[in-house]
Image (tube, rainbow, N blue to C red):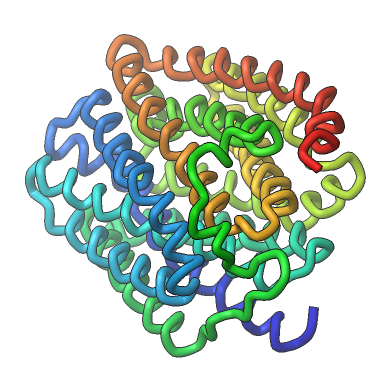
Amino acid sequence: MDKKKKITLSILLANLFLAFMGIGLVVPVLPTIMNELSINGAVVGYMVAVFAFVQLISSPIAGRWADRYGRKRMIVIGLVIFGLSEFLFGIGKTVEVLFLSRMFGGLSSAFIMPAVTAFIADITTTHERPKALGYMSAAINTGFIIGPGLGGFLAEFSARLPFYVAGFLGAFAAILSFVLLKEPERTGETMVSEHTQSITWKVAFKPIYFIPLLLIFISSFGLSAFESLFSLFIDHKFGFSPKDIAIIIVGGGIIGAVGQVFLFDYLTKKIGEVRLILWCFLFSSVVVFAMTVVNHYFSILFVTFIVFAGFDLIRPAITTYLSKVAGNDQGFIGGMNSTFTSVGNIFGPIVGGMLFDMNLNFPYYFSTIVLIIGTAIALYWKGASADIQQDSH
């Protein structure tokens, strides 16, 4: 990768880092806000689901727009909407305003993620792309590392302050993107063609795309069933403060980022994306179940730290695979990736929220079962992937 591309990638990653640090900022204080407004697990589940629902209906359109109108424009607009959503949550004193904020958040995510993934595909070769996408996931996770730590600190002054800071970071990242990013040249595999403009949903159901997209759905469904309630879970079960929650999220983020920077590229080259996905599903299902049986502070910290390691390799592994096989459909497949993620993120939190109100551990049992199903499908895919790729050519 030449110097110019490295600078562009660095700017792109810096903006992602700022946006996701903004998201991370608010995580430790969510239980405080929920307790303040007397909101139960089911309402939290619906709040997360409405974010994902808006992301779902917007992602395919946003993916096409990223191909048609440019990556940079979509990223800048998405970051502005993200800043607005965080400011709204900060001033929100009613459940209705919080729901409106999450809807804007879902729209911003739909604008940003397909455009960023396509942007990276534009400026990298097939050989460079796994490393670049690994860096992308690491930038996101590093945002989550710094964000909760800063959020826990800011919450000492006011439970609402992290949201205002997150809104400012979104606006700052938008300005940074507008000034410093240049629209990438699209040639060869990422060039928009008449074919791209007329793509239908049928493309997503080609075997070469459908199995990885199905695994995206399963991982999102299983993980969001408890991830969305994670801070509430440790607040209710262990009485953790915003500072404790910040320590756990920061520690998990560090482990995840280290894994992506130092292991992801090595593992994808050594065993390939499909095998990596299989082992991560298996590892995640075991560790998620372990969350229900730990009860000491340091054992909780340890299990939580490593639980994120498996999750943080699944997503970039599937994204890398899809990017390799997408050819000139990068924007559309990026949108489909977000769409299937959103479908899982809609139903996972709703089910998880209902189960949480019955028993704190139930969302974790549910996630374990879903991840085991994912392991079985990944095992089938491992055996069939060679045949699928052969049939697609």
